[in-house]
Amino acid sequence: MFAAAPELDQLLIALTRRDALYEALALAVALLIAASVVALLRSRVLAARAAAGQTQPLGSIWFGDALVDGVLFPTLALALAYLVRHLLRDAGVTLAVFKVAIPVLLSLAMIRLSVRVLTVAFPESRGMRLVERTISWIAWAAVVMWVTGVLPAVMEGLDDIQWKMGSHPISLRTLIEGTLSAGFVLMVSLWISAALEARLLAGVQGEQLSLRKAAANALRAMLMFVGLLVALGAVGIDLTAFSVIGGALGVGIGFGLQKLAANYVSGFVILAERSVRIGDIVKVADFEGRITDITTRYTVIRAVNGREAIVPNEVLITTTVQNLSLTDSRLLLSTGVTVAHGSDVATLIPALVARVTAVPRVLADPGPAVQLRSFANIGLELGIHFWINDPDNGQGNVISDVNLQVLALLREHGVDIPRT
Image 1 (spheres, rainbow, N blue to C red):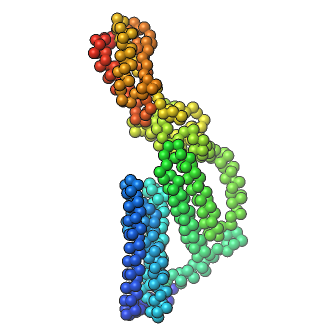
Image 2: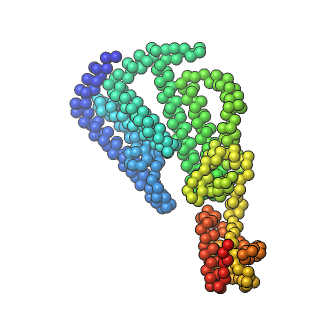
Image 3: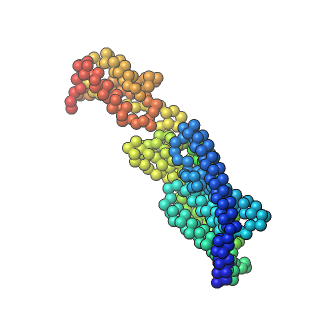
């Protein structure tokens, strides 16, 4: 374990030689070229987004939010560093700086990959910060052990710690390497799924958004499942054992997880059939609002007052849901007024129709209608009905506008509103 000291001494001595200066200059040129290429590509992407009217932060896995914040810079710098190292080695230069630079750039690329993918895949998860820091500490610790020469000795020691899992011998080294490989495979799966999801949902609105969101959710689940199988194989777990686990899982779903399974199945049915879609205005039980999100397990409905309801998808399948904008966004609203018995209703009704038609959000086709609903003890009850085609902008406000116009008309004509 202490044989690493001579290697570290040799590295420190090599860093004081003149060749190390040549290496440092070559490495600086490689980093400058990588930064310049990334800056050029980033500026073109930002210009294209600005031309398309997109003002939100870039948030790209490749470019990140800053010049060296994405995966592209460390990856490109690593590739150039390998090329320069090969050229210097052929030129007979004793390498010292690149023995440190290559592992550092490799670790930086892995850290940037994990951080950016996790940020894009789970933008609102607080636990991702802990995962990011853990990955960073592991990566930099591996760099330090590699540079000092401790890592090979540590790996040999880990290889001596072995046990059997069934009939397969597994060492601690194999387990660690398999876990790292599994993490890399899952990270790549998340990256691919996030990229495909962004491509599927880019610039899509209306009824196509729900269908594409269903495809994105199914695609992510499939990629994560395939990635999980590959990761388990990399760890050394025999996948044939999952036939028994699958049977037990099926029994568990049949008894204890049937509600959860029903919600997931209902979610895919809703997204596939498009009976309700993102943007629709629906009424479930006593809650009415606009659908803002449909996941595989639940649907989010936001009311006009800002309150949100999380409705299990099974409820939307098994109960009656009033969809106010499924095939037609037009909505019929009603209000009423009671006038005195001696009022000239024949003249008043056309005047009310004309005044309600003048309200900006009231449709002229079909136009408003005013009807004499009943003869009450205190007066004549008039029902006022009108259509709007933008219920997402609110219903109470347009009813209030209509009532104000009706009140103004009655005052202009000297029509009394009897008191109870």
